[in-house]
Image (cartoon, rainbow, N blue to C red):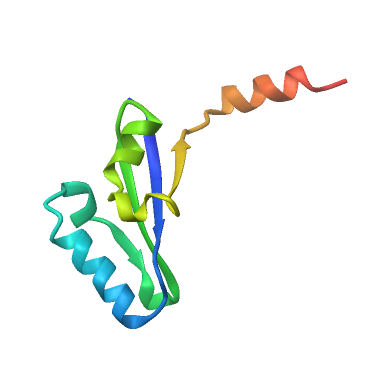
Length: 92
């Protein structure tokens, strides 16, 4: 199943930060309640890695009021064979 990184920014003000965290924690969503936060290091964002079938499914995890600023990135891993093949194809 595809894996996606969901990044959800929020306002930097302490009250807005606390409200975003509270909203995620009380949402009832396993994904949202287990988000990782960068606030204490000055990165006012939440991150989640989810295994869902589509990018649209990943976007649907994000609460509507946070969707506009959210970023969804499909993640993948590379094996050495993958890298070797790309290099073979592009060597002149």
